[in-house]
Length: 442
Image (cartoon, rainbow, N blue to C red; front, side):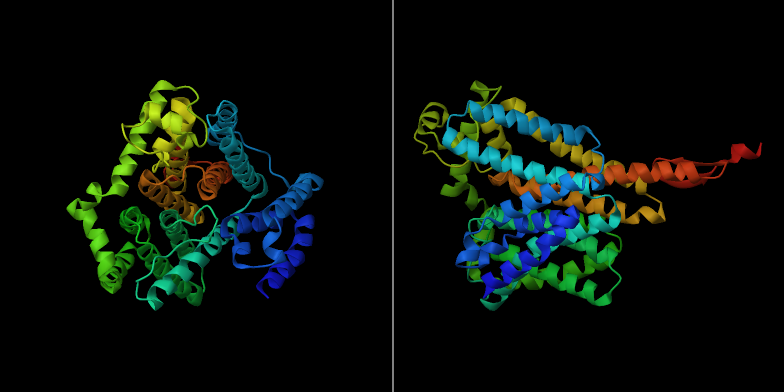
C-alpha cells in the first residue's frame, strides 16, 4: 500500500517538474534527503527514484533554460568545483579504487544538486520552501524517533533510515542536531499559531530522538546547538526558559543505562573504552598517511587497505573507519584536499556572518539575518559532532553551502536596491540600517 502511494505521488508530481524545474528540484531534494523509498516494499522499493527525478529535473532545466539564474561564481562555489575535481584526481590514484569511484560519483551528485539549488532559487519564497523540504525530510525521521523513544521509555536505540547516509545512530544524531536550527528559523517566520505550536512539538521530539540515539557525540553536539540557538534567536529569553524547564525533564525520562553511558563522558570512562581508543588509532593512522602522502592522500576509503594500516597505523591496530570528518578528509584527500575542505566550511561561515551584517537593522531583511544565524548553528553542530564521525561528504552539508551562497547574493542585491532607491542625503552602511547624512544639509 505504501509503495502504491509513493508511486502515485511521484507520478502525480513528476509531470509538474517537466513544466517547472523548481518543482523537480524540491522533489530531488526530498528524495535525496528523506529517503522515503526506504519505507516501502516490493516494486516501489527497487526503483531508482532519485535518478529518475534528477534526470527529469535536469531535462526540464535544459528545455526551460530561461528559468535558470545566472551562476554567480564566488569563493564558495569555486571551492566546491575545485574540491570535486581534486577528489576525482585522488580517486584515480586511490589505494582502494573499487571503493573510491562510487563514492566520488556520489559526491559529484551531491554537489550537482547543490548547484541546481543555486541555479533555480531566485526568491525568498522559493528558498523558504526549500528549507521546509529540509525540515520535513529530516524532521519526519526525528519526530518518529522521538515518539519511539517516548513510547519505549528510552530503552531502545534510535536509528536513521536503513542504508541511508544517516542510518547509523551517530550520523542520525548529527543530522538531527543540524536540523533543529532550521526548525527554529521556520518557527520565527510563520504566522500561523498552530504551525508554530507544531514546530515546538517537532523540536521537542527531535531532541528526544537525539537523546534516544545514545550517541555521546550527539549529546555533546546537542548541548552546543541549544546554547547557540538561544544566543542566535530573537526572543531568546522564552527559548531559554523553555529549555531550562523541559530539558531536565527529558534527561530524567531516560533510563539508567543511558545515564551510565553519558556519565562515562564526564568521568573519563569513555576515553578508556575500546571505541574511543579505536578512534584515536584511526586519527593516528590518518595523520601518518597524510604526512607521507600530502598532495593526494590515499583516496576515498584508504582506511580499508590493510597494507596501508600495517605501514602507517599504530602497532597492533586493526583497520577501521576514520571516525572524524577532519582526519577522514586528511587521509583520503591529503593536505591539499583537506585545505580545500576547511576553506569551504570557513567560507560558508564568513558568508553567513557577512549576510547578518548586511541585514542587521533592515526590517525587510530580518529573515536573512535569522536564517544566516541558524545555518551557522547547523555548521557548529556539524563541526562538533563530525569531529567523532566519518560523515565528511554528505548531502545536507553541501546543500547548506548552496543556501549560504544564495543568501549572500540576496543580501548584496538588497543592499544595491536600497542604495539605488535611497533619496539624496541618505546612505547605507554595511552593518546599519539606512542613516541620514547630515552633510547634505550643509
